[in-house]
Length: 232
Ligand SMILES: [Zn+2]
Ligand SMILES: [Zn+2]
Image 1 (tube, rainbow, N blue to C red):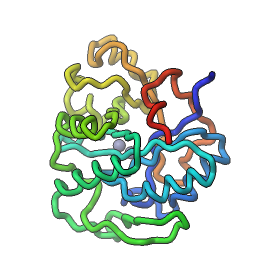
Image 2 (image 1 turned 90 degrees about the horizontal axis):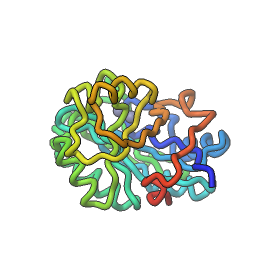
Image 3 (image 1 turned 90 degrees about the vertical axis):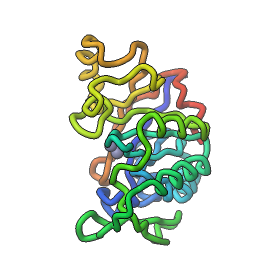
Image 4 (image 1 turned 120 degrees about the vertical axis):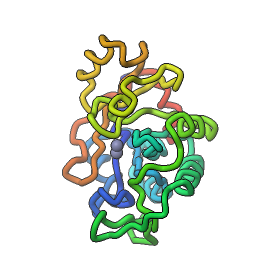
């Protein structure tokens, strides 16, 4: 069986830096029409739009992996994937509690919209979601695993908010088996330089914050990828 066409890193209108039209039904509908088979909406430090996203994916017959993108204390972006929406919500709640009490200002950062499956706004998150949370990378990865999830360092080839840019290397004792790269071919020199543990699986997603940046073509999830068992 060939792998599934995926995009496992998309931001909804809950992320202040994402456009307000990145609604649950829009994300699910556009991806279905474009030919995706499984998606993940991973908002910054919160999973509050996942109940609506899950309902829309069910409606469109699209696979969903519940997730969020934690910004760790060190400013490393860590994708956390879960086997259920409830587990992702629990992680989101625990992360939110550790966020500094900086009120989000919609005119400065953008709105942080919570929506239902009909794309109606049901609330807004108060604390700014893009700040670093109180959990370090080891704690965040540990909590993710405790809740049954799989932590995946995000865009490790980027020059900011990535494990490599902050730590210099990806420590083996963090126990990652999958990494996300914006441009997977850029990992080769990193591997040669010994900055990455051996045998990592590499995935690459859009990190779309707007409808224009949603994918029209999709890579295939590697066969037997650990993430397969997280698909709802
Ligand atoms: Zn990121
Ligand atoms: Zn992101």
